[in-house]
Length: 159
Image (cartoon, rainbow, N blue to C red):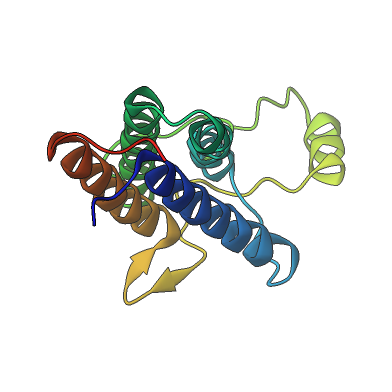
């Protein structure tokens, strides 16, 4: 039985909801505060949810290709964040290093009371020795390659 475009879109929707569900669970229930790069890594997944919904309603190879492209972007963002965590390259100045942008001690104190800055180059969570950013890169790349492979296999029924 051939895999339909609607089934691929539904699979992308389930995966995207699972990823976003987990990161929201880890943030709001487990207490892991996301850094600036973590928040950026979520954007392709949110977009993939929207595209997958359109792909379920209007099955098209273009929607599946767009999902694969979004997952490749997500993999790139995860790889970039992993590199920042490993200190292979610098991250955004707002969440790495010690520069605060404060002009005085009073400004620094006020900034510290306003918000908690989560360091992008500090690993707060690991599983099997890999950070959440690294897992995002792996899962995103694997899913993107799976969708690309399924698209290239041939024609798909639209229902």
